[in-house]
Image (cartoon, rainbow over all chains, first blue to last red; front, side, top):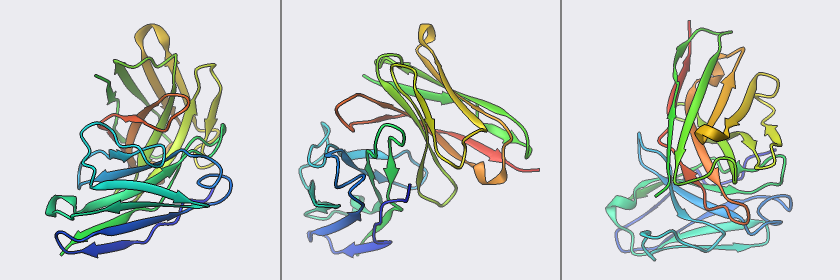
Length: 111
Length: 117
């Protein structure tokens, strides 16, 4: 099972918006509405930011939003803040025998 | 509140074995499905294995035949038995709890496994 494809890095200035893409296939992202996004700061465990494509866990700011079109999912972060600087990973359900497939990660730099 | 606490990581020589544990509270290991996910130093996340409520188990090709996922329902604990360990198995291993019908996963804090001579 191949990993999902994410850009290696994105950047933006405080207050701006950035979008991170996650390209999969018709066997994972395109087939299931089970896409999630994680934020990871150095030395910390991944933190769930978006699940089931568009839903946010309690406590996650509404500046974080998810969407999907075809085989590509996206995470948009609006009103960038310094603390948003982190690595972001997308994840998709990929079927009963694979369960999860991850993107390679995107490093977000807040300029 | 859901809590998943991993233990059992450490330094092991190539070819050695290690058993990881994940103690769950606020979340039923037997009624839901559980995954192990790992992250090598400086690398991305990699799915390792899953065990479903009905007992079915599956593995990533990279660990198939060497790792075994299991659970002890009475202790609400998940395990990962790792045999024939290789240097490339060096990673932080995360226990991930999942409910059917959603990808809203719950993660532990991870346990570091280092395979080196």
